[in-house]
Length: 360
Image 1: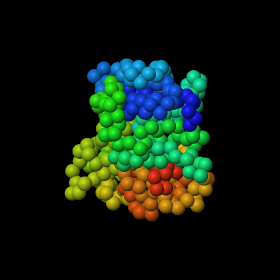
Image 2: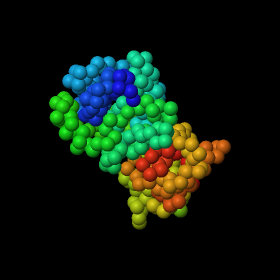
Image 3: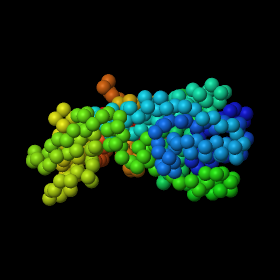
Image 4: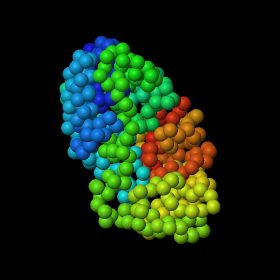
């Protein structure tokens, strides 16, 4: 990034994006703060836990004033509904488990917001994510943040490869403690602000309420139906398949001699299938909606796939096929839910990823 090139900083109103803007300004880069207004329905009481409220936008504005950079609030509510909220609901109604944060990064920040950034003359987009962009032998790479407790690279696999060179992660080498200390030292108004924990359009974490509100009460996937356990035994009634996910154990409310987990959502039959932990073992993953940040995938060695945000990497091989990429696992794993992100790493480098279509 050249010294006088304009950087657009995605400002959520939290401490991380605040410090990202501060660090860039301190390094001499001209910056503009951009806040996306995404969700108009958050309750005021959720302002400490959401990045999309009026209070959050005001915090971002105050930070930009403190840092000494311009700030603009942009209305992306329609784009957010179309690209994140509605697909989130549709996925649950199809018996899948989506990851809305990945879609928000891919289709909002590194698509719609990037277009706005270019329109004001910005050459780079910066965020407060804990990840790194590195250049290796002339090739730009996405890598894990140095702090394993805060690394967010799992959510960033959808960044278009040609935008890696236009992306900045000023916090990539920091810990959260470092970030807080920098915010305090700089007198940023968000220095002591709490973490945003919930999905911004799911206040309180009750995603079932969002699905019902958007889809209506009479949708088939919200209709009660049978719960079937090992050996085809009828164990009870579920409350609607949209309220369950593969691998779920809690909240099923059935009795058995050992722990039971959700092993299948039979959408046509509106039946919830349960089994033991071993019934969830899988050795291959089939992807869709892929984005790869490296060439010659089949020749790469030392790969691992992370199937959950806080999960441990599982050694694997990548096998592109005409019907999608197959990830062959070198060690069995408890089956993840269709719709979740499968992210492939080589060491700390993100090779790419995709959405799980099915596990076998």
